[in-house]
Image 1 (cartoon, rainbow, N blue to C red):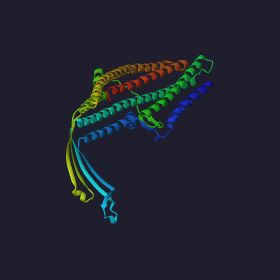
Image 2: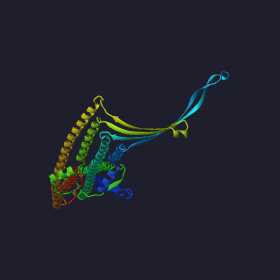
Image 3: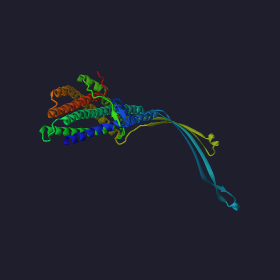
Image 4: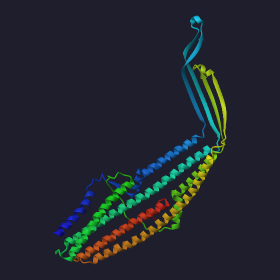
Length: 432
């Protein structure tokens, strides 16, 4: 009776999982392969959206900086209405001196033109700073995309591996349960019988834990891709290890060629250098040319007869401002030195990241081959065990299951380490 209950209980969980996946209409289930997952992550993740908005903002700042080079033309029109008191001399019989009040109208129009002639290169440097900031934001977008691509690949391969584990659990569990139910050992006190049942129960517990972990990895994948967490989906892919040979020196050269971080540091150094130049321009004189043309009068038509124009050449020579310019110059020089130190730190991190990914990849390539051989060995051993020896079969199937799980872990880590190499060099690798 315990045997029948155990078989029915375990079969219920396996059937319930399979049925729940198959009973959902296909029109509701979304399907993601690796390329589609990366596409949605690059479109939906807020980090990418913010980085792209920063690029748009930087482009507008470039336009704003360039507009300062052009002359400034202003138009001013002013109309004033106010009471005016006027004294009137009358004969004493008419009251003598009296005040007459009437409304006064005044019109004023001005056209102004201002052009910067010399400012020590301040405006051109502002344009260069804005363009460098744009380049920095574009590099930052590449950094974000590179990080997100690796996160998506890692989550995709982990989910794919957990799915493969569930499949091998279902296959092995169903085989063990069938052997258990078909066993001729009917005595509950039999040690082989009890021990076989304990192994199957333990395997079922592991299966349920794996199933729960699979659901958690589904949520992690949806969050990584940037899609609603209640989305029903399935993934399309194969857990096939990638076996390639790499040269560490070539990988290091590629990482410094394609990784955006070193380029971003160089751009930041350029920005700091330009900021230093801007601080130095504060000590230079500025020369500005201006012209005004004015119309004024008490009546709108007659104001055209009252004209005034002038041309102004303005020279501003800074002499003393509490040594603030010297302090700003020292600040910018310190920032420039800090940028050079940061570049050295980033270069060291890239070297470390590339070598670490290279070592991990080589390790998991060896592990994939070794663990695959172990799986084959257990497959051959299972063929030699008699069907009547239920305990030996159940134990061997348990070891066979574990060897498959170990191989799946190795294949998953192999793919993740391969993706880590791509992340370390900043570009996809072409499979051989």
